[in-house]
Amino acid sequence: MSPPSFPSSLSPSAPRSPRQPLSGIRILDLTRLLPGPWSTMLLADLGAEVIKIENPETGGDPARSAQPRYAADAASESVYFCSVNRNKRSIALDLKSAGDLATFRRLARDADVVVENFRAGAAAKLGIGYGQLREANPALIYCALTGYGQTGPLAALAGHDLNIAGMSGLLQLHPGQVPAMPNMLMGDYAGAMMVVVGILSALVERERSGLGAFLDVSMLDSLISWTNTQMTVPFARAIDPRQGDAIEGWGGNPRYGIYRTRDGRYVTVSLLEKKFWDAFCRLHGREDLINPDETEADRLTSHGARGAAYRAFLEALFATRDRDDWVAGLQAHGIPVCPVLTPDEAYRSRHGRERGHFFNMAVARLGTEVPQIGFPFRMTRSDGSDAFAARREPPALGEARAEFAPAAQRTESHVDVS
Image (cartoon, rainbow, N blue to C red; front, top):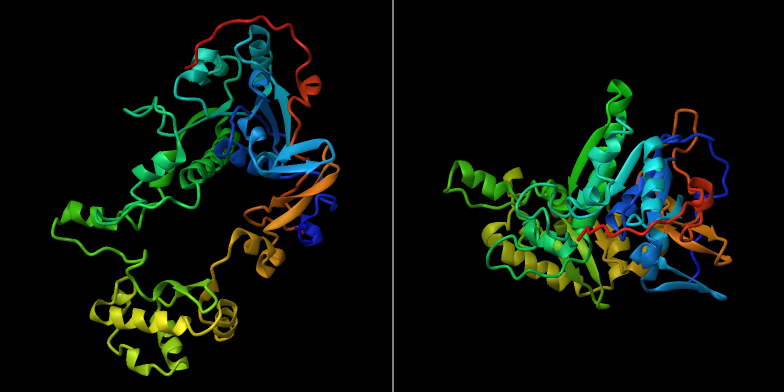
């Protein structure tokens, strides 16, 4: 499938302002796989110079080996790796080698930010912990991303997204619910987002005070911060144990759910507000299902005795027409019903095209353009220039060593960071 065409403002070749919000900020990126690389890519999209530090002894970031692949002629690149590493340079350094360790420490003396995702304490064993690097660079902003944080009984445990999702309270809202595998890496992205927020905050603080900072970012802490609505019942019970009613937004409210259509596809139905429900019922000749006594307090509930009738009506109704017919007809009336899209469909969606959800980027070593996920928000300066830019293709392993870290003699050492 050929990548779609997108507005010229998102084209990597489009003219742009020579400076971006983070131009002049140098970030040394020691992270691998998803959360760290995604966060540093977003900072690079905003203009930061991100230098990706990769271990040549292991083939670099493990994401480089992931399937599926972009393949062109004799070249091959991981789609996963390319999707989170644009706008970066790569230096291959073995930090267990005394020579490469010294090279990294020299780079850190002039860096604005270091980001790592080792287990708690591992960076210090290597000689690149915050306390060690701060001696030569007091203004350094050092961000340590882990699964569970630098303190607490789980600090030494490897951070995997599924474990973190399970501990967040998001996979089982009540004891009777059977947890299901999530369809997204929620802990990874929550942690990555807090890396971005933390670094941007620390950069602003440094402008005011001149002080560097240590950022302890935990994926679990970050994901827990997203659970405001799920925690309403525990919070209520903390004050009054008799409290038990939950906010209903996860399947118990028939007016806020997913329904199968005639063609075997699905729609998402969001008729929480009385005005939308009433309009929907009138449109389909079911004024009898309108509750004249409904109040705002009913919005996020299962609607009590009326709930079963609501659900039966919706299940039977949506089974009478195809998904796209339902969506077109109801959206024409301003009723919030949307399609459930597969990733292939989301990639081709009209709204996604107009919003720049995806764009194409040339990768010279592949001799072709590859799709990229677009920038997550729009930032247009008052002069009309765009704050984001796709300036550079995902880097080949070690491609920038000669530029940023001239050859140094490696002296082997044995540093245990397990």
